Image: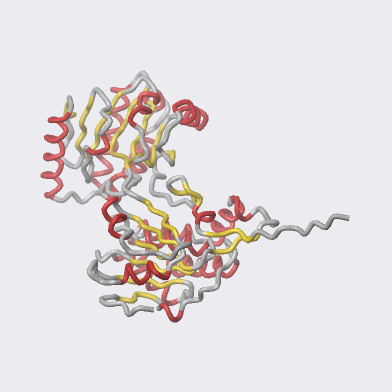
Length: 400
């Protein structure tokens, strides 16, 4: 292997990796991840970070066994399936724990994993990696290096699958590094997400004050928790139903209260929001809704332009549109749309919306509070299938 410059090995090393391909959801992998879960849950530092606790719960044996039962690849005993080999993950810099979920998908698919974490210093990364070292995970190496390092070239050359999380520019840069002929990329590019609320289901007859607070907290977790920087964080809020104005007042007042209690607003965001507002006002007809303070900024629009996804800002900036039905969203939905977060719609109604409009975007439709919840089906791909291979054994047929 070519020597790598400017690299920090946070856990493991290439020479110490166990490179045996395993079957998906192998017992030894489940045991190791369950041990990681228990170690994280015992660590008092973990409790300071909800995303670390959520990750620990994801890695519990009970959850992993449930995922195995639900997985298409694990319920076909006649099919031999193994991991593809070495997976090289390039984690994003906007969601601290993302690297760990990417690795878990690779491990559960039966692979050995090398993951590059962001150079940004996140305590969540330090906590998780510390326990990965302590339980001596042999099928994983965690590294950190600057852009000028040759590590991308070296790890790409040895990978069987390369998993790239990041914007379009990041993906293009990484792809300048060659991978083996049979290797391929799984890319999670820059995406856009939105929310839909049925106003007929959001009123004081159906929601008591505690329920309304819980709904606001779930929306807060979808958006403010990562400063709206996650691809799954809604930026556009679409309202339907016959009681939109009343529902808006209830909902946004509750969101404002939760945000003031939990969110640390940075002064620079005020400038960013004002710049975003002026930019949007120059491009379309807008009306800024009055809010208590700059923690929450709402911009009412009377039409949905095709490029609405380009008018976004972090830290609590929302465009709002009132529609007669969800079908009004369909014309703007392209392959850049990832997640639709919803409240007040039933599953069949949402399924009919997708099928009736033949959408080529929106890969996830989840209730409020679930936009950042990791799944082994992500961006429309079954990660276990994509990260593993089938060994096809044909029967011998002898004619008599």
